[in-house]
Image (tube, rainbow, N blue to C red):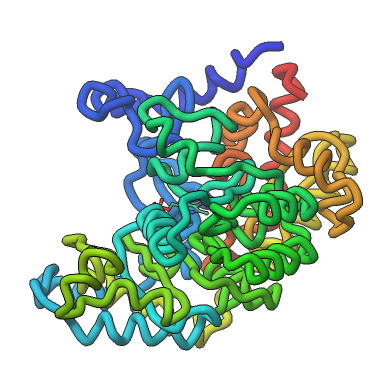
Length: 451
Ligand SMILES: Cc1ncc(COP(=O)(O)O)c(C=O)c1O
């Protein structure tokens, strides 16, 4: 097996990206600003994004499937959002005070997300999950938070155990005392969740991605979701949905609307900011009231969560967020992205079968994933072997993944690893062109001995 042919073509085609990376690794720690962007021998450097397209430093144009790590449901540089950002930037990028824009932004979220009685803004999705965990601990007076294997809730200490590449172990730098406050459980295993909640009295919350761990890499069993809701309610444990990815994508009201299961708290990010850095925690009024300042020393010291943050509800983000959420609510952007994703999944599966490639595409919403092997029952909403199927889906492609990604880059398609986020700015032609490009990428991978 050799990567030579694909790697060589990739190097030859991208001299400016290669040079840019040489400079960047001398200035930016680790050479990258996000672990998921890592690609050997060097990443693409992007100069421009518009609609569902991007152009790199060497002048190649791509159909984009990163879509701002899932944030750009409406496409890149949407004219109405760009205008809103420019208008607000001209009036100042920080108010040094409260703004009516933030109220409007929060109101749109309240009108959309079923669990949102009150909203509190932060500056990233990770901050929103961190805040959710702190709030749940403060509200219940308990310490343990249940998290499901393979789930992603941001990189901060409170959520760091259980993410790749460490699995159940603690990443370096996370104190034992913090790591031990997380209880890692298998997803789609209601008996395990029931055991944990009935045998322990120290659980403050269960946090989960309601569509399934790692942006639905492992699809959730809706029966499990309902079961966890019932169990948490029975045991006085708060249920936190991390809808940083699924929010406004699965439905306007997120996966909670889609599955009809309403949590106590919801972490939001990505789409709500219209392409600017954002995050929000929303939830039940009686829990969220712990953010309230009261002229009462006892309350301040023993109940109130002191929450600050220079960029919370920043006016430029709020302007972009208001415009984006109005458009998402009014234009059916989520439905369009979902229909395109399902078209792409269907045509990729036909292609794999025609070319006799042992792989499959899947996804219930507007995220498309490619996985090697036979499609397990879990991707057909058959949950009878959910544990084994989940392990297969979480394992993914291993070392073949980056080769597939580079083979697709050479064909004008920029996948996010081996997955793709669809947006309302993609077209049917984009989807069909992507499938044709995949056919050519498979041919070059076969020639290089990878498939
Ligand atoms: C499900 C989920 N939660 C939280 C986060 C963290 O969000 P952010 O990167 O905005 O901190 C991510 C990031 O991709 C995510 O996928």
